[in-house]
Image (cartoon, rainbow, N blue to C red):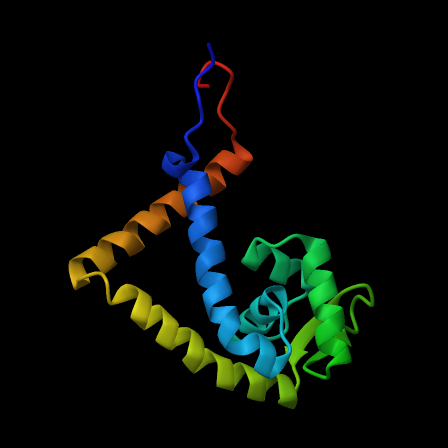
Length: 156
């Protein structure tokens, strides 16, 4: 008989559900008002912090699929929320920046996102918050390592 996979106890599933729940809760606050989808907000959020990235760099920073990032970028450019500039050294590489309108949207959503984060973390005391941060950093590092060095058949 095969081992059963109990999803409610399977960490990757639990993290995915938590991420989707949190993203959806925040998105419910900005989707209708700003006509943004979650991938578009993620692109704005990254470029609000680090302007001048390429779409590929945004995809890497958000761990989003390149196609999803490309669609989000296209939609944001059509909405005049992003500007794309091609570099003079390499016309194949473009840099993305928030437009004035994109910057205003970013500045309106950030307080909404931060308020949700505070409300979510209010369920933890300071020690638990620090421990959660530490554990998330360690899990992220381990996941990155396993992406480049997957477990061998013997380890499975």
